[in-house]
Image (cartoon, rainbow, N blue to C red):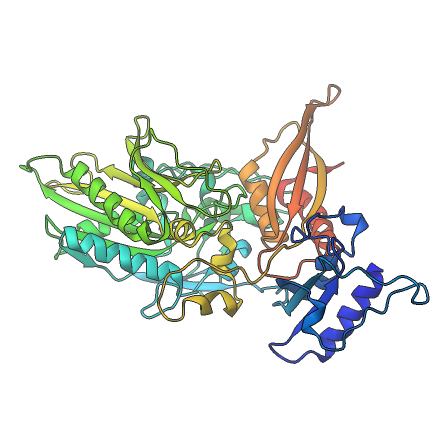
Length: 530
């Protein structure tokens, strides 16, 4: 039956008009999706979303089927018309065409580094996230709408000056000391880059297939050595890898504080994309939009300006979120109400982390999701300015947008499907409507040995999976870890869940991604497949 449905969907794709849809009505429980009540086991259904995905369709709506709405409808039945189909509880599944998977080529980007223009090759995992201009003037993207309204609220409380995003995409390790006290960014999270001024560029060897092992240099002024493969393709160039994609706008704070028009008592705000390697999860993103607010104070300041700034920002967030939440709690000691699918309440708090000297802003939206959306820091005395004390506030615009719009998957913010962006074309923030519902998910396992002389980088493993599988993996779970007594090799077994939020991902496509991962993983991480 499934093969027949797949065949029909494939032929329908050939004749469907642009913007058209396909309606498939199935008896109660036969669709195999969560819309069916009761829901049948997957193998005992038509597996309708998987069959449609094989033809490039996503499920966009599910409607109750009422035979009375169709004049002259008669159930034809089966077995020579002896047994009619039961139409009670039947559902009509509405499928629309999805965008295809794209194989992006290498992307070279130019940026200003010191006084020179340099070129660098963007890591493949970030190729579809460069030059998206979500924050451009009049862009209808919800991230910009959230940023504009937050800045407007902060501007009611302090004098505020917006800065153009002239901060370079690349920074060297001499400017990285600020990361140690102004953010929670670690060395492992950095995308290391080798820029070139002659029009050519190279990604850090750790992101290529030619290096046996690469030790990323620490956040210090000295470069560390690395091991290369016998091919020696990169040779001495690796020692020049002291540049990284900006992981936070805090690396720009010195440049801002040294501006001729930087005056105490005014908030200076800068917004733009930042890039970090991270573990795969619905709320962890390798690229997101960040806003930085820098506030200068004279040495003879009075009162507690740090507390005032944190309270002002928290109140600005509360004001922005109020129309979308029934109850917003400001105390971290209170628990938000049970909310199920609809978010009715949340709690907002700044939590002090003495080891880092930072205050992290958390928003607890329930369901175990206590999300860190921002950070507050005070610059060490004399670090950025000998005349002023400086306060710094950063916040993750993408994460705030997800919370406000009720989104549970960051990937939707970066979709190329215009059905997402069109929801905000009138400049209005509203609950996000998913144009792909009940997407199928697929489970695949992978096992490998880690050589005795090598350490295993979990974050790099997740980054490789992101790249090879085109961000289609939503979770990675460690199933087993053990040591082989004879060789001291470590064995690891992971379970990966494939699911798309905006594209037609079939079981065949997921299996192809898994096969590609088995080819790429040994080359990138030098592991031995089991």
